[in-house]
Length: 80
Image 1 (cartoon, rainbow, N blue to C red):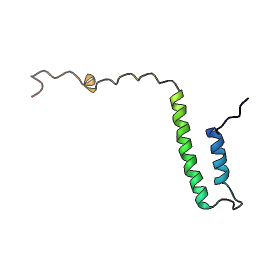
Image 2 (image 1 turned 30 degrees about the horizontal axis):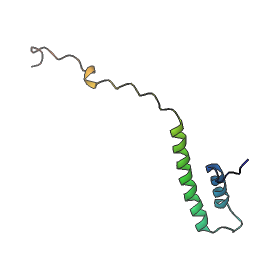
Image 3 (image 1 turned 90 degrees about the vertical axis):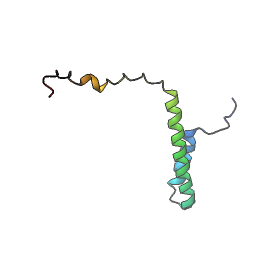
């Protein structure tokens, strides 16, 4: 079987979490910030992919017209 060429989004996010949580001093604060921003971008991409895979929701029922709830007009003798 041929080896896959690219990492999955989950694998990328795992590595970025490792960078962000580093306490050994191997990565600088700038590296951690870049990891955090890239992870955020990947999380948005992942959420968009999941939303695209889900079937579209059924359209909601139309809202009733507010004028339908008004009482009937008063006769001319009572309006004055």
